[in-house]
Length: 509
Ligand code: BG6
Image (cartoon, rainbow, N blue to C red; front, side, top):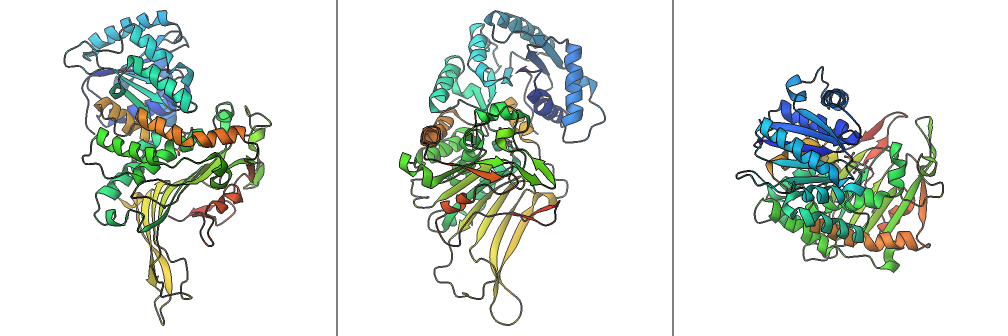
């Protein structure tokens, strides 16, 4: 991996879960790959009182427990780069302490004032921390040759369109847009980036990638887990805010964008924004027809009773928050005019799978009616996770007499590549932020455009009692009503995974 010059990464919320589960294991992997700057240190900031030694011990345990690779030990040279400062993050007086500590680390590590701030805190602090950093001048770097401080924040970027605008305005008061890195961890996934390569490195797709040849596009992100220990957070969020507005919209952006003229952050993100701006908003009276929401109910999975959503800890017993969301929509531009997009995401579905399916139109006049063993339209399936890969479904002649046709799979699996190493999303994204590459980060205008699209859905789901919340038994593919979104005989969602045995699920790529 490419290496950045010297820098100090300050993590706010350093004593929290995200830091030890995701951030430190990813940074340590970058260290092992020699991808961290030579002059690098981490300053953890949190409310909990910890010494540097205690912080190092906690991070060491986190790395050992949560790293993808099984590790025996963590290099002491790395741990010696970790420091900790306890402050009250909501008190602006404490920010002078950060300034003093960063200045001394800057001297010690010769980092040229190159600071990155990562907000691994509750979202309520997203407006405050940048303001207080700005008040003590930590939003600027006066060193010649250094870069302007970068601010990395995690979703949620607002709760709805209005709060997203407010957050953006607050951030932009102290940091410029090109200093702000908004993480959407889906963009850090190798297979999501491969959507760009599949589309733009292969000449064969572009002529077909439009309304003339594509019948519809389907995107699924399913999870088998429930809300686990996050009931409190999830109940004020729901699938629309938690998955659709961000992760699934980013996938839509990459599938639907025009080829950028150059492969740089702004050109790529400009094209994604254009897609979001072309999304046709649903009218209030269309919401029941074009969107479906559901909530998982208690059920028996593999012999074990799992609780329904409303019985989960932290969830209101009469909650209407959706754990499943599906919708149909259109993109009003020349490439996609009239092509329906179907997207869905849910918890407590039969398995964890994320995939994009491009359904091509059938031949204009089908010669093999009555001789086709399985469905006859071509599909390109891009499997984001697990079992990452790409599959093309093609009709082929069944060997032997006559002209019987069967759909066969031409597939590529990442796992078949020897020496394949898929970096985690956090590794990729942190490394990019250190290098100053924001291509795989969500830009403010795109976030707002995605909120604009979901606003009528949010409004109707919140205020229109005629829009139902369908129950679905945990472990199933969500409300059956979601099939009606297709409104065409013989066309429905792709159900990639089938139960083979009581304890095994087989997912065909
Ligand atoms: C997060 C959501 O952004 O994405 C979670 O808050 C969800 O609710 C997770 O479980 C899914 O991510 P992945 O990478 O497991 O598909």
